[in-house]
Length: 355
Image (cartoon, rainbow, N blue to C red; front, side, top):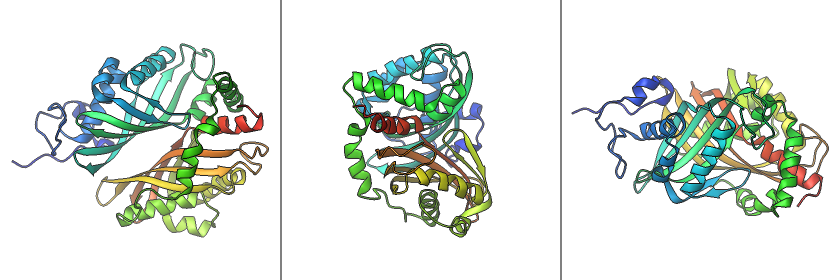
C-alpha cells in the first residue's frame, strides 16, 4: 500500500494535522502509534500540552534528564518543563502556540530533530518574568528545536522573541534587562559567566556541515552575510529582491537593501561578531521550493555604539535559529529569532558591573 506524503506543516490545515488518520506515513520506531509521522508528533504533543492543557503529559514526552538550552540559561528535567509551563500559563492564561512550520531531519539511530516555528498570541493577566500585570495582548514568535527519540524530547534549544514581548507589554527593554541582571546578582548568578564555555565552543567554528545540499549552502551563506561586513551586491547575490525578513523586536524588512541597513546598525554595536552554524535541516515546500532551518550561535564584544547604547565591552553569546524559504536559488523569506533581552542582560551585567 502506498503511503500518504509526510505532513508538510506549512501547507496543511490544522484539522487535517490533528486528524490525519491511523496509517503511518513513515517509519517511526519507538514512537506511539497515534503519531503518523514525525511532524505530526511535534504538532500533536504541542497542541495537547498548550491548547488542551495536558501539561503533566510533559512527564511522558520529555526525558527525565532532558536539557533545555536558552540564551537566558539552561534548565533540565521533565518536571522543570511542567513547572515552567504552568508558570507561563499563570502569567498568560490564554496563550496559544500556533504552528507556522516544522522543518525536520533524521539524525540516525532512531533519533529525529525538529525546528518548530511558532506564533503565540496571549494576554498578560499575571506577573511575568518581565514585570507586573499589564492586561495587554501580545504576539511573538518562537522557534523550538527538539532532538527526539523513543517518543520523548531528549534535548531542546529554545529561542523566543522576548524583545517583542517586552515592547508590546509597554516595558523598557534595557530596564528589564538591568532588573534581571540585578536579580542574578542576588541569586549569585552571572549570565556572562554561565556562557563562558558556550563562547569558547562557538569561537571554535561551525559544528554542522553546511555543504549537505546546494540549498543549505546558500542559506548558510545568506546567514553569514547577515552578520558580517559585506556590500549590498553580496546580499543581492543570495536574496530575492522581494525577500521578506523578520528579526527580533518584531522587525519586518523587505528587500536586500533593508537587510543591509539593519545589519549595519547591529554590527556597529558588535563589530567582531563570529558565527557558528550548529545544526541544519531541509524539507520540501511547494514545487521546487525548499525550507531550511539553521541553528546557530555567535560571540562578540559589545565594543561599538549602536542599537545597544554606549559600549560596555561585554563578551556576549547568542543562540539563534533562522528559517529560510528558498525559491529559484534565492532566499525569498527569512525568520530569525533570538532572545534579545538575554543579550541586553549580558550587556547590563558588564555595564553596571553586576555579578
